Structure formats: structure tokens, C-alpha cells
Length: 186
Image 1 (tube, rainbow, N blue to C red):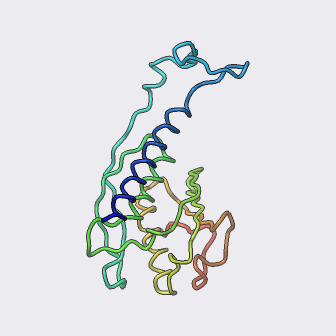
Image 2 (image 1 turned 60 degrees about the vertical axis):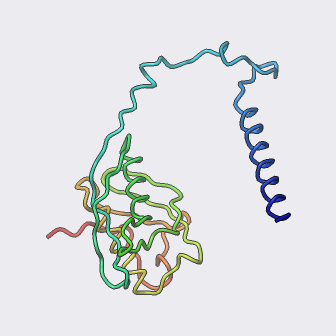
């Protein structure tokens, strides 16, 4: 019981320290180095400019694999976004988390480092930690679910998938990775 009290006391102190540090961090500083009063600072943008961000909502299909990791399955999801970069970032985030216990996300441990959409090409730069690496079958399925999820958008004609900023020969060391992956038209 004594350990529980120490742990609770430690967590309370840690929380208080975090609040104190957070409260001290956002004070504007003047050229002389003194802290300025936030009421005295000039806001360079008008309130109307700040309110211009319009959030859109769209229902999308997200591809996962079944619980046996043998076939691709799809599920609907709703995303909210403000621009195309935000849209594809939210799509990738949806790809990382499966709400249905019968669906498995093969992208849940893969970190999205950066994303860019330009002239019909969606470039994703990812980092793959060791615990996210799959066998050859899993790697092929991971690429399939990525393509099926991203190519549902007519404006996306190709996917450029980079690993830690480089166009690698393979995503996880098993299957050849095309640069870029191009939408298959039927």
C-alpha cells in the first residue's frame, strides 16, 4: 500500500510540474528580452482571416486485412480535413487504426514522416520500426491496402512511397517496390 501512495504522490507532483511548465511557456518576448503582456501584442491577421479555415467532411473506404491476414477487407470511415494535405494525412491515420475487431491494420505501427500531394502524385515518407516489419505476404497485403485506400480518390494518379526519405527497392525487404506506384486503369 505504501508503494501505491508513493506512486500517486509522484504522479500528482509530475502533473503539477507539467501544468506549471506549460503555463510559463507561451509568453511573448519583446526585443529587449522582457516578457510582453499578451494584451499588448499586435495580431497581424484579422479575426476573419483566422476563421477562413473551413473543415470538410468525407466518407471514405479504408482497406484492412481480415483477422487471419489473408484477404483485403474494406470498411467505411468519416474523415474531417481542411486541405488536401490534411485530407490524405487523415486517410493515412484511418488506415492505421481498425475499429472492427475482425479487421487488422498493417500500418498501425508505421510512422508517417511527411506527405505531399502535387500534380496527381501522392508522396508518402514513412518510417518502419522493427516491430512493424512483416513477412513477404504481409508486405504485399500492406501495399495492396495502401493502394486500394489511396487510389479511391480520382485525383490520385500515382503513389510515391519513400522509406526514411529514400526510394528504397523494397518496403520491408521482401517485395519489389515500384517508384511510383501507378493507378491501374481497367
